[in-house]
Image (cartoon, rainbow, N blue to C red):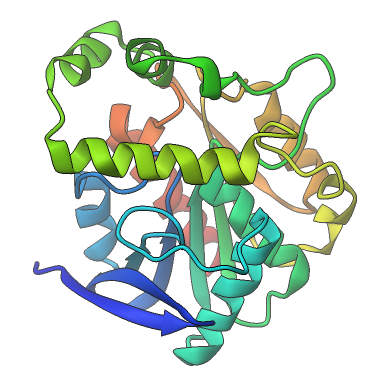
Length: 259
């Protein structure tokens, strides 16, 4: 299935947008690492959905707009994009930083959102259990913290990034620091507004997540009315990569229940 790449201009920003598949619309919002490769996870989603995978403004190959100061700005941006493309009943899936963006969008408006799936989402803080400080980790420390399986971490470390990939890593790191440096990867005011999310919500978490502790999964489930929770065994911060089939089974079950 071919992936179409194009640039969409919205709010004065040119954003790279990948699109593939057919069916109901799904918007995937990536984490701090961006979209360095096209994973099997996306292929499986595209078998059922019209899948949209953008590079956030200031990440990857998208432009950095002057108006971008905080994650809430990206939330409004994506709400404008949904309106601009006249997309309705959109399934929004957000991983890590992308989950935070999805949450900020959903507390503002859900008239174009059909469901919300949060994978290892940032956005809030549990006192005494902060997210890991990814900003002081070197490449080895970060990759070892991302995965539950040390062999998978070794495989990832053995892959030498190209000069282009290094440039993108730097771009994404700078963008993440700009949005999530202080306070680290959360909005102190977001927690009190999560009750506004009225669409079916699914929380997916790796039971060995070293970046955002698994305790956050239950915390989100308690703050978002009616949210369902799927803990993925033997998975770290990117469960859709380490345990693809259990994640897909959990997502399929959620979509069938909420249809």
